[in-house]
Length: 70
Image (cartoon, rainbow, N blue to C red; front, side, top):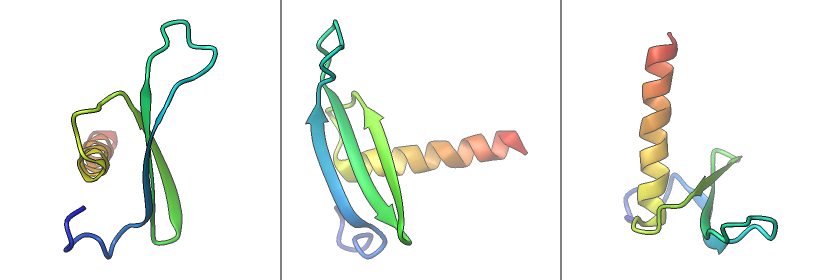
């Protein structure tokens, strides 16, 4: 994670998971992080991005959804 943004995120973790009842045996990625004492969990199948890129992409997506919701 870039040093300049490291101060905004606490407890960042990135792990690969597989659900035991998933017939396709797909591997997912769980990115967890905390901002201002609020925890967030992002489940994705994107393996080509860093944890920071996953966090930022979903943050941008959320801002777009908020724009269209208003």
